[in-house]
Image (cartoon, rainbow, N blue to C red; front, side):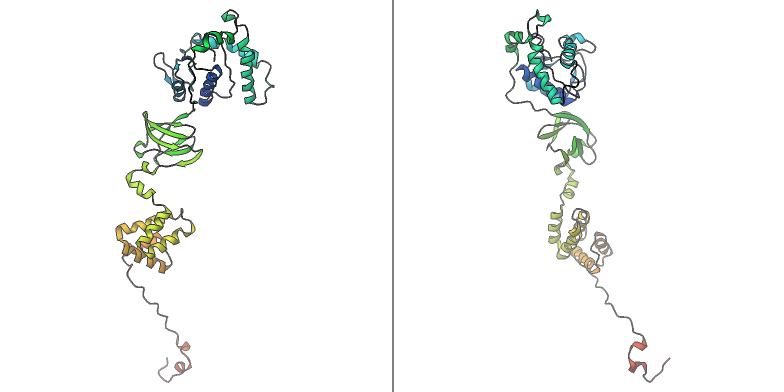
Length: 343
């Protein structure tokens, strides 16, 4: 970045011109100058300008937030018009030859290169005799004339946020970075804009804020209020809720639910929810009787309990098990040799 009047220069090497590097470099440039300029004339790279236009360019959201924070105007150069930013185009060969020339093996890391670039700006580039300003050093002209014309830096530091577009999936979640965040179900299938800040994630639909979450690195953030009304009750049926509701419906229902979730509460949660839900159709009394019968049969599962209720046999007593008639030779010697008709 080069100031138009004094030619004061800021140089920051980066390895990728992504959204974070682009905005962060501008923030550091303003800190280096000790103030913000009133007008920034960038090139039309996508991380700064999404859609070039002479009258109404579409600025990247993160870059736009940066401009709003510092109170400056983003005025992109016209396409294929390098003279619109000649003050920064001309010093490029100078920076390439003076700072980078012959130093390919001198830096062992990117931070070391960036620190040395600041040293080069202060001790070399900005104190040299500049032909474009009659041999005056840029630093001297900046201190004398331009410094007081800059906009004072805000008291609050700028927090860089990353923006991305995403489509709301059928499970009401969108992907932001490596994490998933819920969006109200009415926006399923729509394209939304996601803003990930240092602490929060905000999701916008057509410019309107529709969801806010605490930012996480990985995993899923779900607000159950974002589900349709008919789904909220189901999603809130946790293992603790199932046990509590089963105890209200009867001892046998509680026993069946306890057996189902004894081994793996989450794996058997759907079965437990189903058993408890049978009370809505068949009533607590019938459900408790069916659960008791399923326990006696040694098969306390949702399928068994439902089958008993559908068949309507929850109140039937099991037939007593009669031992089979013993053969004659097992009745004892008296019966075996009794006088009578033996065949």
